[in-house]
Amino acid sequence: MKKLNSSLKLILLLLLVLAFALSGCSSKAEKTDESAEAAAAVYKVAMEPTFPPFDTTDPQTGELTGFDYDMMNAIAADQGFELEWVNMGFDGLIPALQAGNIDIIASGMDARPDRREKVDFSTTYYDSGLVVAVKADNTTITGMDSLTADMKVGGQIGTSGGDQAQKLADEGKVAEAKIYNGLDVAFMDLQNGTIQAIINDKPVTEAYILAKPDTIKIVGDILNSESYGYAVKKGNAELLDKINQGMQNLKDKGELQAIYEKWGLTLED
Image 1 (cartoon, one colour):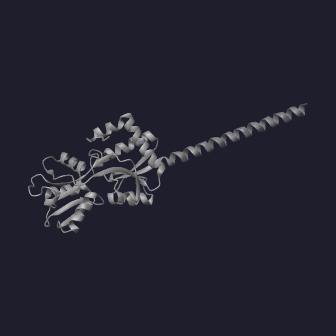
Image 2: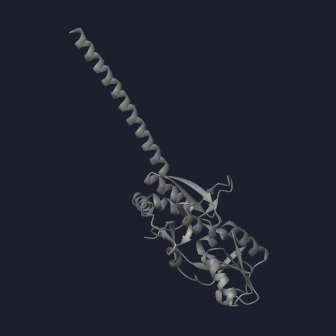
Image 3: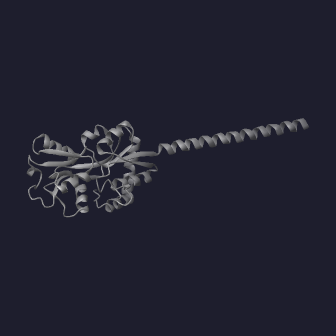
């Protein structure tokens, strides 16, 4: 009887040890799974920050900010993922996305057909168009048709405005297309007379005019139609769905309207 009791005690002890061991393994597995899930939920998002009010820097801190910054952070919070922001030249954004160096482009990018061949775009969130900007005291240039073969016209590299400026130069309609990495330098050159005009997106040009009133003006009509969207790598349907769903949720909750109003923009239905 004593031997039987001893055997039972030994069996129970072994069962307890095994239970603790299995519990420890399960806990470790859960922690490993949680860590993997957390790592997969961090996306690298890039912008070129000289495109206010969509993409800019805080004058006090020098940190990235703007409409796209607030919008994408709100989408991330709604969808439960985190973001790592990167400052990058506009012409390098799509190549970086294709190479897998970044996951999202949030940089006031026109979702035009040639770009859709390279990347996938979210639902578009803002309709824009190109305009011609000149110094406030310029009475010679009244629009695109009044640009002449002795003039220098600026635009940003990789943008529709830069492409249009280069097209005018290639056709001999202007003397030179001066293409800039950042629009801040382009507008400085416009003010000091290095170039006579800039071709650029309307809301961005308006933001520069607001920052330096009575120095720059828009002339002529809007040249074309553009629609901005967020870009992901071709075939990344999971991330694209998260961005689109997050955007819709923000709209349904009224949070989207608040972001538009903060940056002086109008939410189109």
